[in-house]
Each structure stands twice: as structure tokens, then as C-alpha cells.
Image 1 (cartoon, one colour):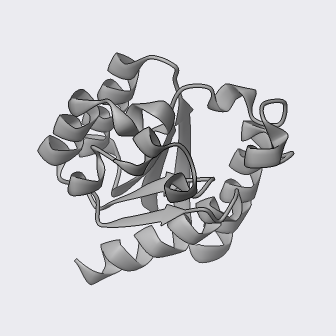
Image 2 (cartoon, helix red, strand yellow; image 1 turned 30 degrees about the vertical axis):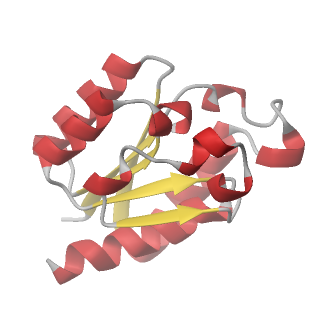
Amino acid sequence: MNQKILVINGPNFNLLGTREKEKYGQSSLEDIRNKCEAHAKKIGIEVEFKQSNVEGEIVNFIQDAKKNSHGIIINAGGYTHTSVAILDALLAVKKPSIELHITNIYKREDFRHKSLISKAVDGIICGMGVEGYIMALDGIKKIINKK
């Protein structure tokens, strides 16, 4: 049975490809999903892609991962810097997880330099553009295989 990885995208990721292309690039979320699914197949894992602009839905995705997924990759967007609820869900579920950011949050506004969710994850990838999703898939597979 393939390992199932939940990839969660937070607010405004539904606008990728049209939003701030100088920061986030040309790829849409659907483009990223397709790249992830192709790469996942190549490395022998399964991905489930989710996106929500609603904090509570993201918490529900994380809680559902407890029984449905082997690991979590989360790009929480703006909620990275504000959501104790997402942090608490990640801590409660205790799944191998990677925090992901398309941009380098440390080269952006000061408020983006602090991640509330970092305490709950095994690794962080930031500033690698949409290629970070592929790196995260490779990384989560290695983390899961070590445990």
C-alpha cells in the first residue's frame, strides 16, 4: 500500500497563477497538483490535495489526516503567522509533517518571519518556489520511512 500524503494549502492559494506572479510564479494550484501527483506516482506515494480559505476547514483537514494519511505537507499561507488553532491541530494529530512556503518568508515583511506552526512540524521548506512542493514530497517520504 502506498503512503498517503495530505497536501494542505491555505488562503488565497486558489488564486495562484494570477496573484502576485513576481512572488508566486505563473503556476496555478491545479498545475502544482498535477506536478505533485506525477512526482508522487514516480516515488510510490499517493497525494491528496486540499485548499481552503477558511481556518476551521484547515483544522478539519488536519484532524481527518489522523486516520486517513501517513503524513502532512502544509502551506498555511497567512495562517502560518496567526493560527494557534492550526498549530494545536498539528500537535494533536502527531503526523510526520513539513511546513512549506513558496516564497522565503524571511525576506518578506517582518510579521511573516514568525511561524506559529513551525513548532509542530518535522521540517520547513521556504523560498524554493513551486519546486518546494516536490522537495516536500521527497522529504516527507524520507521522514515517514525513518519512523
